[in-house]
Length: 198
Length: 198
Image (cartoon, rainbow over all chains, first blue to last red; front, side):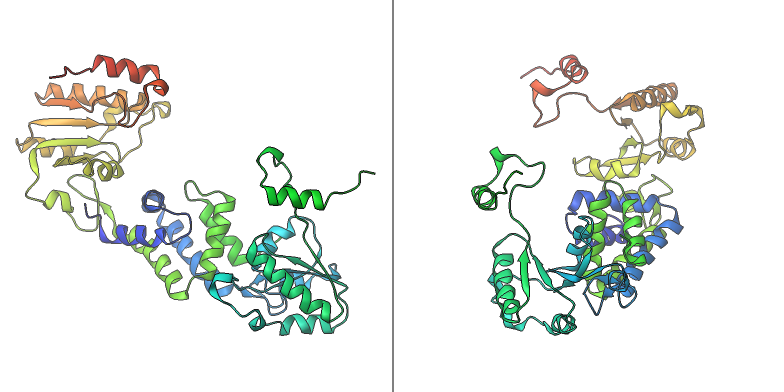
């Protein structure tokens, strides 16, 4: 059956969002039809405002509506530590871990299959940060997969050449995880990275 | 941590949608930030347009942007059958079943706990439809729960008094369902409503 055109259009648009299938899109669209008009308008405005006003911080690449961002403006931060991430959304997760240093987001997708030349990565803003001489350690925090692995090795080599200490996030069992269901590579890394009980 | 205000606002608004928790809202908001500006604007416009332009058909209550709706305008429909539903979104599901009669959506939530007087249900548009004399059968298609049960009995009594044949959807095992996991009331109804194999 053909639904009313504006309803069909809304369902189509919602389906383009990640994890939203046809059924969920229909349910969301029908809910929006029943929202007070004001709220529907505010939702629409929030979408446009977020898209128009939020941009990557010129220092660290984090999502912000003021430049530099709230993290770069924070004078209480540890300026000797720099954590490198692939995407600025990774910073949101790392912030919850209690890490209190600086960040640097590459804000690019790295996919080995895409035949990307790693030499093309724009490291200028990073080098400017490093040139200030405060940073004692760079932590590489890329996803624990093949792409992250290649990226980490490339960056570690580049930064080591500049005489900077480079570390990376530990691999091992996730907290709350189950040894029985852990994959063999994770288990091997957990054994390799074992710690002495003292 | 505090995210950029427009981003936080968007996450808050998205969380008000049904089935969207904090994590999904964040994922959707970050996706929207990476959308081309045009697409983000079109999504926002689709929300406002759907909310502003779609309304219930004055004849049957179905969601439409033209009055009467596409179902009421369809001359090939069986005018002797009328299917009553609680919500116009139920019509979308029933249309897929192959039913080809008319509809009538009450477009009201009925919750026995809310102490609703069933006599308050506005049946005027329905009575106008019935007064035309074409309708031979009214099918009650309310959710198979207590609220639907009470509503069905009330409407069946009201319509029977007017000499109209009233039927309701069959209860029983859903297709693809599993007898082992069917609840006892569904099973009892499936036994009561058993059909002769011929």
